Image 1 (cartoon, rainbow, N blue to C red):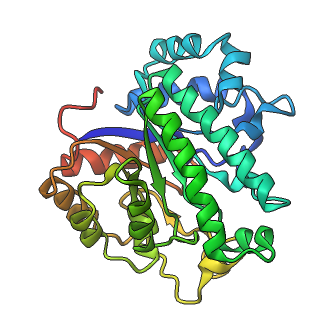
Image 2 (image 1 turned 135 degrees about the horizontal axis):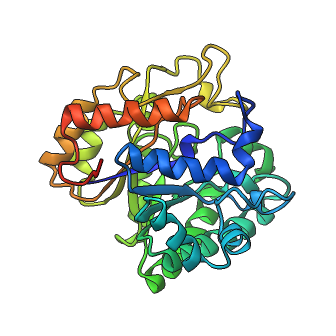
Image 3 (image 1 turned 45 degrees about the horizontal axis):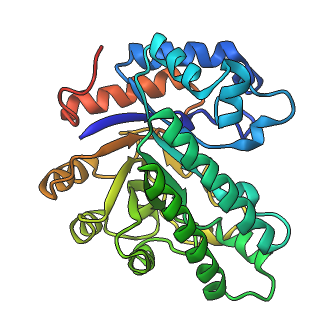
Length: 318
């Protein structure tokens, strides 16, 4: 297994200490050095074209921001290598960004930027693009109007098939992530994946599966041939009040945050790693600590977890 650190750990969407600093070029320069010092040389990038506007192109989360700040995607990759980052191993597009207004506008925007993310993956040498399969339940209900959930999923299927064709053309693996607040939470993702004849893989996200009440180890066993990427996330949250249907399911009323840093929650991640090994999984493992008001601490906590469990032997350089 090859380790990867998700720069999605840097929360740009919610107020936090030094929130505005995170829009500056020097913040991202320093982050690369911190990651390399922590032994992480492969990163995941969330694809967020919303930062292309408003003068915030220092935030390197889209093809345009790479071009504006560095001249081209190739120049950006050279910059990363010079600063200790060898590869972008995974790109994550969450189409919730476009979950406003009429439902057809959502699907057009999600497909457009999905294809853009796939093209960016090819340009940057990234082999995996993972897509959040639907926006949160509450946002879908707000957009869909008279459309049923099944109609929404049927349209999602058509969008994913188009993206899968683009991914195949570009030599990229397309994966689906089912956060616990989506229409396909937990084990529901399995039947949906059947629609794609093996052309689309599963993004196995540990905390999101656990919060949905799913046995993560059983999913690893049953879906071992369809796992395209693994996200190691942690949590102590249990959804006992259908928080997944709320307007802000990641920040419920009864908890400050749903997710924790790696090793700080209650998931048996040792059993997860053992099950992945037993299943013969030898792909990318993305570590995504999500309680990162202090990114330096999150990097070190993650490195401690990896070293203490010998999760990805031989892949780190410190």
